[in-house]
Length: 283
Image (cartoon, rainbow, N blue to C red; front, side, top):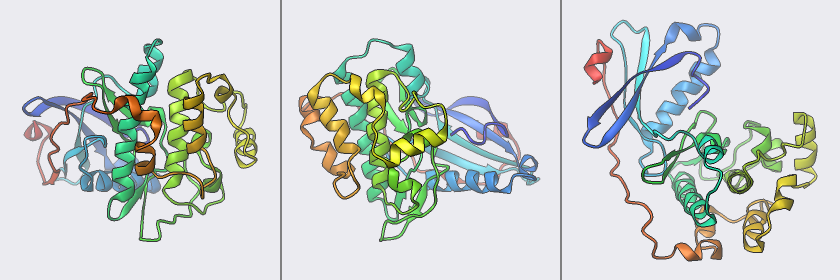
């Protein structure tokens, strides 16, 4: 969760439940006096996190406002190894199987979001918004500040996101949850090549022109394995041809993971809300 870091800080890391580490954030609400939209996004993300409980979606453990109403506090689970982009750039030699394991977990998280009632469209999925626990390999999707909660039509209309990962229909402001699948395909590409998609472009305008005309990132041309390239292309297809997260989970791309118990799922503790007088009371 990055958009509010100018207004908050991790003030304490603590162990609230056996074997669970957490980050405690404090947000000075007066910092948002000149930025009400950012405050709205903060509340939106925390509210969304509070309703989601899945091993591959970053969990919110508790939230509260101090008794003086000046500080908004919330606690999220720690991913000590940081985001997947930084982790991948730190570890240059990663096997294809490991990347498949990461991708499989991301899809499990997306499937949960997309089949949630109501449906949650992330809209800003990228490797820097996906976190990893290096000791277990557990992947968790984070940064839901731009997420959209949609009704049964699953349609959204706002143009939001990071240009390098935005599907063509997102620019056109008429889309559904499959924009996350497009972004997921580019995440897989980045994990393989350690390059940000469309890094060859020097402006947002160049990225926009390439995306809406169907020009793929140059990095895709450097992917040698036919099965990998086919999988990514499937994610980047036109909306009517683009598969859901559930459909991609059964793709032959993941065949070698069948029967592989690569992750011990951690229990998810629902968040609670209360009011407290001090940070120490949360610890």
